[in-house]
Length: 401
Image (cartoon, rainbow, N blue to C red; front, side):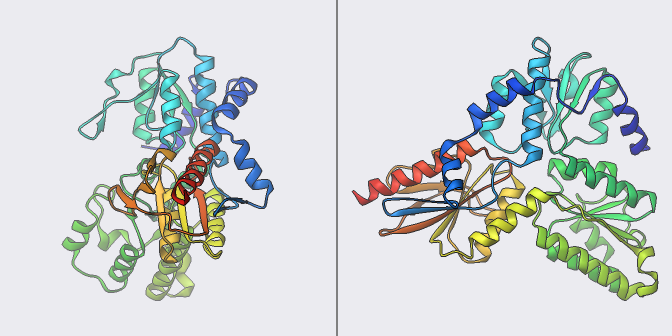
């Protein structure tokens, strides 16, 4: 399938919408009331610091809603206003934040049901409106919805679309796309659907395994078993790793994506020589500005003298877990929560350690003066951050009493 030609034809269709519907003023008012926070603005105006009693909050200087997320949510709100009586579906969570997705559902926007891990598009009827979330949707899903005669509202983040353009270029030059990402993540599923031959690698350990295979060969059966769910159909490592291009899930850790690109550049240069490097290696900058800004702000925050860091965001939010990883790498106690409700009475907090299940930490706020760093993922509204900060202050005040 010529995915580029299909996307171009879809975008010219009268049933396809990539922008809002002219209801920006009403939607802005609603979103400000639901998601904005006077307290957060006060902290910003006070050099990102606020002290009450024995607690000082230091807020990362870039956090929370990014432009792409805010745009996607606003278009979803506009879609309901523009189609007040139509049945509206969304192919995935609009973004990875539970409160935002709840608000979307309260507008009578339904999620495509999932049965045994597969989406059931049978429920969608011709004439229904279907929203594609900020992470995008696979080419196959777009094609199915187009053939059904649905009205498609595409809120895909432009940074994600930029990655799609990169893998299209890889495909045109017969390069295998090595995608830094999580093979089950909606964004990576969408990106790989635009690629030709692809291999998805999660981290530097997997990248180094692939680089070693390129240079030295290895056990092909072992390779295929290791990446069985992360390669294109018919993938052959002995054939398909002679020309590679780098792409990424936009929410992955920036430094790791960059290191991965340098690793494969060195690998191909060593194997084929500097003169022929461009015939075997291709890279474009597809690191999202917002992801980079939040990671850079987190790197600044961990350099401050903070006693602990609270990271706020959906548990399935990749960019949020990358922020948590930065705190862990510095040995700073960190607590990933998805809402203020996780801060419990009795100086307890229900949080999610990285790659583990939820657990409850007792006496998480130690006695005496404390400096707590706070950040949030790109899908987290300021209002949710405010509620968490107020709970921290309240918890410490009770503990002191």
